[in-house]
Picture 1: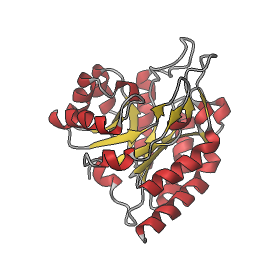
Picture 2: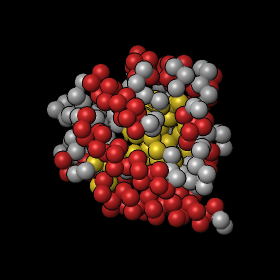
Picture 3: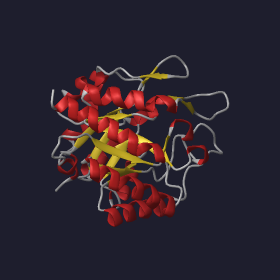
Picture 4: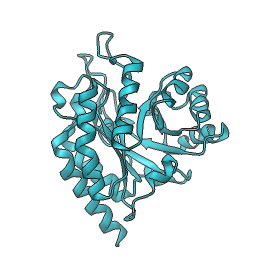
Length: 271
């Protein structure tokens, strides 16, 4: 079964879930988060993909945490998928990273700022892995069909697109939910990145802010709109997270959120 088939296995046509820390901070941290989420997702019939960046290449300041080392973090991702029997997804930033990361993960994710980089999309597609393309904050939903076409033209058969908000002024983002059905017309699953859409980038301090109190609002609206999947970052203690803690969901709040979202999806399916 390939990754896309796995994401479509829910007998109740539930959404699928990409969730985990922003960046891999260590092995035990990653295993603990997966151990908390996997059984809840299984109970609710939610196909689950563990998310973790092996390196953060896009940081506001040079002294920001970027990772524990590429190979060390990728090996941790591989251990998560082996130990829990679930797919894993990570970001890549340069074409030469695609083949390296593909040895350890099931889905290669293209960051929003890089979604137009042809060489990156093509090399990701040629690995044979599923490619998740985040919509640039500067692009319309309609424009994402060209990124999808690049992956397909390069031989990629498994593609998803992720909505993560659109730049609104200098330091905020807004979600246009019309983009979900618009991008679904490309014939690909569309995922709502709940937590990144609540970022408040470019703060004067050089540290990105966020509005985590709006996580459930954004997630509920996405499920009601028909999103195929939900993406969110979570941490046992977001205040101590080494990246993007300002817009993360506390791990202990995730089960209740997933229960609410599953109830909304069930109601829609029965409508």
